[in-house]
Length: 527
Image (cartoon, rainbow, N blue to C red; front, side):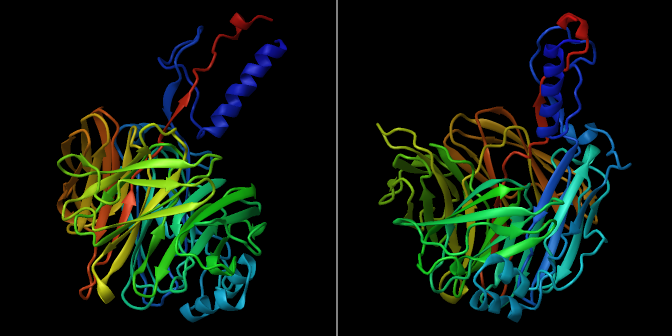
């Protein structure tokens, strides 16, 4: 066998390892003797990370975990090498949080991520080997609950048939205090480069970025902060150590002496990888999780603005060398409009820009579309929305980052019989979308419904509910035909007159991976 043959085998093996541990076979199961299109195969291993839910003793957290049964989730993949097809979320090593008062003092008394994590209680208790959530089969969601401030960050792996499309939702309700509200977040895969436009280090805010390391070796993380005039002078934001299997919360205001209302947070790793999310909390606005924006692009979609939003604020950042001139449009139920007084936004290179859009939806749910202004180049940007419902001491915030389209499938894991709303946006051509409601965590029968989303509009619906539902359930979105579709799910959980809510965007679940067909007959390569 010559060097060419060895190089080909090495390349194919490396690709399989990087792209999700997909099995390599010829598309028709036979011998591949000539070049064919890459096969779309189910991943066989997925990782998810959930941040520590809250610092309040009043916090009540619900975890809902689910793998779709249809498509790749039905039978793709084999059991893991350890002998089973189970998906388990386990507490990360040394990430159990302490009482709320200790967490509150951390940002005031310590000035770097490591010390703050220690003061915040992340090393107070040893890790637990007992799974918090254990998923047994595709098509049936499972739920778990945790109370108080000691609920840890979670690290999880799914293998075999449970890996393709595995989704876990963390929903926390805090009934009182400065961090009150509904904090919802989709647990995410680890990464090395993440952007969070929409954070704040204003005087009335306590925003943390949570860094969770799923691996057996430590990660070294850099955090950059950008305000309206560019990079903020940071202290102790380079080389933050996140130990193996641990989670470190970093109070953003401890990284710089410069207050700023709108901040873009850039998280990168020098070594290793981390899961990251920003918890934004205000004295009057409540709190919620800010997930990472979609990768920088010239055109972005931010889906799922509620119809009754009382204030909408757009925050964008241009990471490239060129300024971005953006056209801002609202895709409503009836078509796409240019919102009066908020038709455009200029984002200077390396600076954070914001646009106060007030009650832009005017009682009709919608989504924001960002694209290059007429005649302007497509300069890449990242963006997110801060959305407010209610007023005065009854107001509540949520975040909507720019999100990629659902190319094959996406899932929102935690839905209730009442209070769930699904937003589907077709920024281009009309699209047909199949929505599947799973069985409930405690009982119920699957329900399926197909929707048509007209081009240039947002369709906001109460999604199908499983017959005989008990517990919570999952919603899976699958485009059937037409143009691209972007999706978001809103969960409304009002309490004591406060319009508590959270919005989760639904990017593609990446349950399938493109893998070149393996060369079965190596004789064609020569000796």
